[in-house]
Length: 532
Image 1 (cartoon, rainbow, N blue to C red):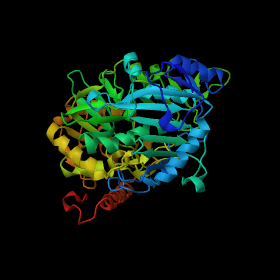
Image 2: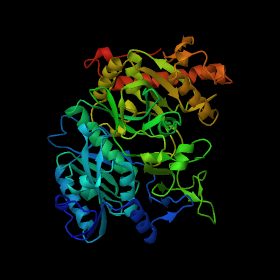
Image 3: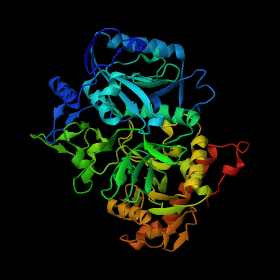
Image 4: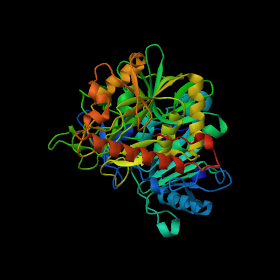
């Protein structure tokens, strides 16, 4: 095989079965962008970022994500319709097919790290069919220094072949696309989809399995930032709930926007080296940090251009509601490098409530923290996953069930213990609808949400009066600086108070049923919580 670029001392892809062709190693963002443009796979936008279309899939496909079922995973993984088992022999055959497909081609190889804390660092070799997929890997993973690249030894391989489609009956997949994790071979195999988010979320799933079991690190689907005094805030939530937007605060240092670990020494560290932000309806006025990060080296996905220009029309959702941009974290001027900080002072659970009945902000105590964390209630917003075109109620345990191979109780128990040790305040924030459900009410004002977050962070909400919500059990502030008082009580924003009560009771009952489904009475009665 011909090797080109910044090649390590002992280049080899033999473990993957890729033996011949041309491997471009560790190319710069400029080189990858130019190859993408010259090959017609990308267009250059006015800001200097390149834009690509990811094809059929513009979001994740969680029903097509598999874990090889073997001696490592058999008794440890919480098998479900999210953690779907895959036969080792079928993985071997499919790996061979993908390798044969890539053999003889020009491919792109990147050596990278996960985990900003060196004590937990994981070496990853990413092999991609397309140059822009490799640019995504450059942006999203941590970037080794030249001397680290020379002696790089991979612990994991990610093989990404969007142009290869599986034969479902023969290969054991559900359809042509797939993302499969083999913990014995330490290989992630992705095919049939160009959506780059599958690359980072597959590695996140790996860390969510390995770190709790071997390092006593709690992996978290959250954003994180730090104030001037070093006070850290965590923002838990599924894609589309506001993690990236709310964590990009000009008054606070960004630690990361999506994936973090909470170590035994009470430090927080980013798993990644970049950000992957939604850009639908993006504007410089509302989200200046993200807007300014869209420059040379950034990768835009599934956006449309204003006709006759190279300017992006961020309001155009004709391709998807899930248009995205990836960029290195240092593109955010106010970012913390290295992305490691002390334990959190405030923790926010972000729920995009499509029913419009949750208070815009409330405080959680005791067992309610576990209840709402384990419930992970939100609405999947349009475009985040394949075939999601409008908000849908969902319960995603730990605010990240599609990426959590272990039982939710593992993560929930670790979080409860760490919160007690840190003495952190925990808040439930509704970034969804107010004044009625989706289609009737209005989406929460970002300005108001930011004001409530700021009040929690600066201690303003510590000295106000609260009421106990009779339906959800949470403590709701009666006042908040720069937020209309009536907005804090969702019932007052509805035209029909009785309709509000019915819808709120419906959601509370759905939460309880979901939560009870996570447990049997014989397992752990202590974790049973009734919210009235």
